[in-house]
Length: 429
Image 1 (cartoon, rainbow, N blue to C red):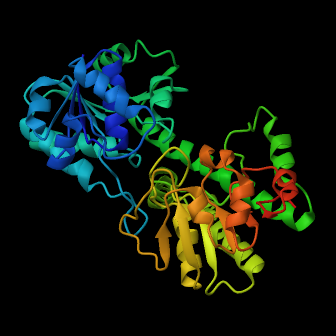
Image 2: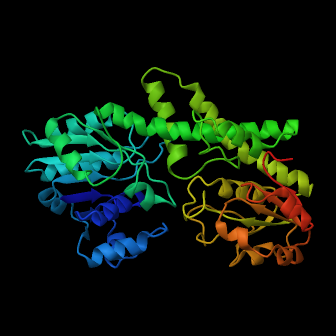
Image 3: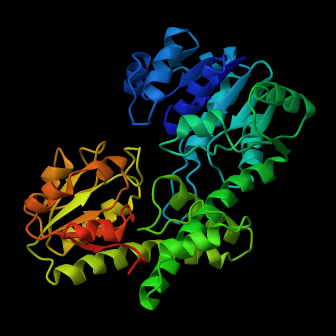
């Protein structure tokens, strides 16, 4: 099948590349000429394990191409995915201006029947608005609107796209049902067909529930520290209950990235707009942000006076296996420590510079060992697997004082303490 994907960011490019891997003919559209020129050469503008090789393979096979011309997509592709950003507005709502602009551009060039698919995460009722806009600017033209939310996980985007837990498709007509069923016929996952609104809501509800589990386990970790319990044992004990599950029950410094913070805030705003005050979502946000402040206080308590102290930081991305630092707890913690006068030496395997953020007294290092040189304590804020293989005897020699404050509970306390470190983690006394 001939597919177009409008928007070549994380979601759009992964979607297009994975459909190409399934044998479809893909045209990726973006209005950023520099990005398109880079992608034509098989060069990514972000880091995602395995994606560069998969993209180059499908370019070589002629299955995927790139353009800035949306008319080309509307003229030639039966299915058009909209995968542009929906950033958070100042009031907590999703900014749908990119969705609106793409919808207008599609309407302007629409001649033959097309299936127009929302892939971006959008508020419930957005499909209706897209449908109304296209009808307004393309009166009498034949098309269907479909909601097909993405559930990819950064760092495992290829795996979670090609082998998803489920595929959700919201639609209105039998014709759209047949086309989308054919498109996903080679995927071995439950295909859930719903109405438009239900599909849109499933995405926000899913991400908000995952955020709730993270905030819940982090709140439990605080109780564990106050009571002398061990959060690793507690979360394992409750996670074995099949009704709860172990996923997203790992205590740490809170969630970040582009999706969860944005989607929780947008869902809270949507709920209020619909007339329901979803206070649980607001508490999830509050616990998540407080976790960062609490962790900084843990560092401050150990150092006593933060001003003038050198702090080594391992990790800036919001999670391992990505270079995404949007809403990263690590960035927030570095900012707070810098504001208190700390001098920060940071290492991240993929993040080598900040994107818009300004943090005083921050130096990027080339190795985890360099980040540990001369520091009063070492803080772990992202659980990159690389950190599990360092030589801690060397790390100890480099540090002014052998103190490790682990915000990701990467190590067993007894293992690190045996090597002569003061070791603090989250919810484990």
